[in-house]
Amino acid sequence: MTTIVRATLPAGQFALENTFQRVPSAEFEIVRVVANSTDRVLPLLWATADDGAAFDSLPDAVREDPTTREVSVVTEFDTEYLLKLEWEMHVRVLFYVLQEEDATILDARTKADDWHFRILFPEHDSVASMYQSCQEYDVSLDIKQITQLSDSFRRGWFGLTEHQYETIVGAYREGYYAVPREANLEELAGSFGVSHQALSERLRRGHEKLIANAMHLETSTV
Image (cartoon, rainbow, N blue to C red; front, top):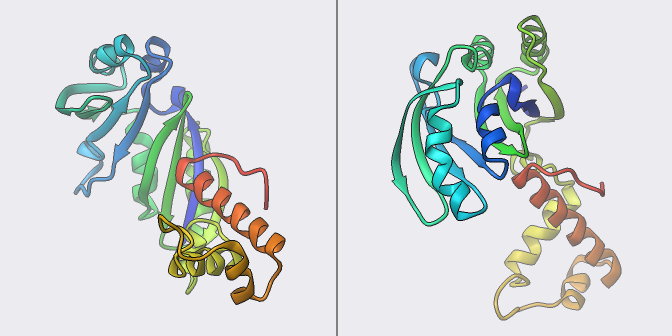
């Protein structure tokens, strides 16, 4: 069964560790690009940093990082760069391992000095094979979550329970998130046949799951 894995990897075992040391506030997101081989895989990178001086120094920091080569600025905005680059060989080890399992990196971004990945595997058994290969290459991939995709694909993608998914979709369709609101909690609670308090807690937990999974944060509720 098709499976999505959420995992983390220290920058020191993947990419841009030196850049984080030079620019601690740096944040990166790899743009997923279809490639025919791992030689030029994932060549686009969104890059940002907190303050002006750190932001200005970011392209040079990435250029001088030993995990990259041939770095160029594709475009620059007020708070972000889009960089084009090639990764050095040891960075591509993870790409080779994933390619062996026919896996696809759906999302890769940083938080502090760790990389956070969302990876799609066509078969659940491929996850164990990939993890074993990572250990053989001394790649300390830390698997945080494994989600089986089924008919509830959209719900499972964000880790929502069935009730949370149905409640958020229902609230959206009733205009709860519109500005101005077209429905309030009391009205929604009546349509769902639950109390105002129960609906409020269900929405709050669902919102937390959505935010946590979208931004690679840990949830405090279940």
